[in-house]
Length: 329
Image (cartoon, rainbow, N blue to C red; front, side, top):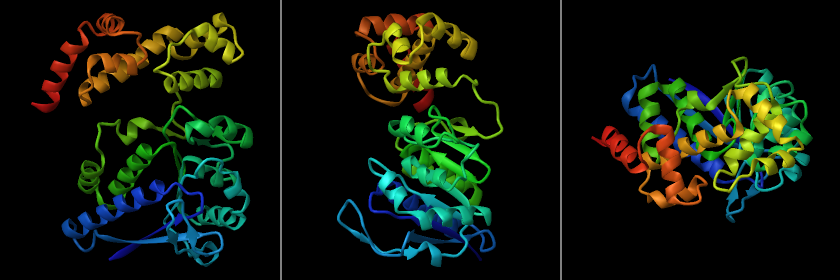
């Protein structure tokens, strides 16, 4: 029976869910594997909590978390850097030993998973220089200023570059854990954990990630920034002249660059986003049509119905009946 060593870096401003969720999912996967796999296929998980100096960490919930010093922690197979509440700079500033340790772990063969603003620790280690990464959308602008050598992909929830994963959200982290469980224990184990921890239909891991060396959507970083802004403000009433001004570009130039980058005008792209969001809500929630209309940024149910029918050839209600019959029959 082999052992897989997994370390989670712990700090005072840590987002607890980005520690507890992956550990619970990993332990659930290990329990499934122990019951269903042959002894030769089963791998025991050795999970450690480590910190800069090995002192106990007082977390935001008021609990105290015992840790081991990174300098006394041997080579790991996987290392996680959880997300950091609010401004990550104070944590980064006091984590020099951890940053050096992360660099050393990676060069000796560890796979590293950075979560949200915990990705800043990887950026400080220089491991991400010249590589793609993502982070929590709220910190994307500051991240770009702090780490210009990192190729930030704010419109991706997951990136993978060599043996480094970065994830932007807890849902994306859950998808990466499912992916890792499939590597460790196989697809049946991964699917079992996904069924127990995924409470909504999401795009699979393979569809969410940006793979370093793969084909990017396009190379226009400004348009990628505008796309990300549109996704983040889908519920709002959007005027493209104002969007262009916000990004210090003319409306005409923005439209031209949109068409060159993705083959759509800004309005066509926004409509596509709203339709995609609406179809998912119609299929997977019990929200009223009016609520969905507001959620995707339409002024009223009538406007939403006209937009929906012009794109898909059926009303939102008709679409919901058909897709739910396929999903649940």
